[in-house]
Length: 408
Image (cartoon, rainbow, N blue to C red; front, top):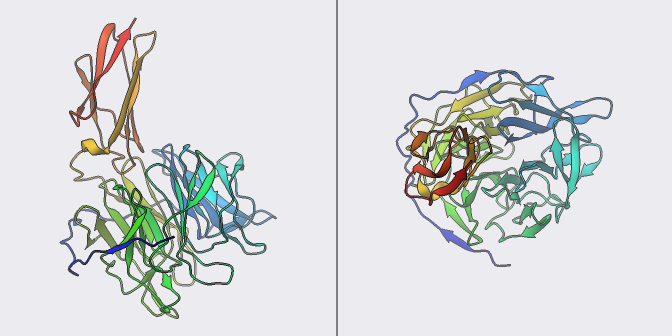
């Protein structure tokens, strides 16, 4: 398989920061102790923190916690089967929380994956990963396909391989490999049709890297972007904010693999300009935090490692200000139906989650309504209408044709 690589050279100048009014704010701590090696995801508005330490019960099962929408208290979910750390995860194309791969300290590596349920724990299995990998970068794209990027193989060697899982077929496929090997890197979907991979170790060079690779999903091609402004970084948190920008949060910094500093620094990448800017620093240093965007536009940095220990602390940053509205190209679909009561129900579906917390405006029979976007959907249910009517998306306007309906 060929590696498709284009190098884009940018001036090594940071864009002027525009985050003076933003600051990370402490949030309620997780129950049960220091939270490390977990993966975060947003499932129907609830924030899930799945896998990793602390291990609970006599069977040393990996923890799970969740935060309900609008709540400020973390709750404990059903633990995983076994002490799994450094797993991948995300919301798949069927809308299910999925966990895959990872390492069990007493049993070794696993290629297995499964659907996770807060009440039942691990439920339906998914197809095994094609290869044994650990310390890989994982994420979900805008269509809910899950990625396993790089990592170490069974011999401890760094790899360039890229695998993608599609729940609609229950199959993994191999994609164009990364241009360079990486493990302890981080990955995130950029909301523009690309997966970004930031930092990590390069075993061949014997150092942490600051490089940023971008995978073009449609073209199956990699390109090299401007470095993140660290002198090498491994295991940062990565998240896509409600403002459409990518946040690189903390991490273990410095090129020397035998030393380094756990960082509070945050850098922000604009997918439109492809430039990095300095963002607001964390309240405390974090390596490998779980990062999740909530439906109300907060980016959460959850747990992670600090100097020699883990932490149960959580902080969050509001990322929704100054978004500038929802452009037409980010709107996928409008659906509507009229119930027997004359109530019109429907939703506007976005292509990804980066506008979560914003609003769209629809018009039902000439009356405007502004439902909030939660995740990828802005749902509405309005009453009461009669006869032939139309439901139209007016902000953003001229994106989709109106939906004609007939109400009783």
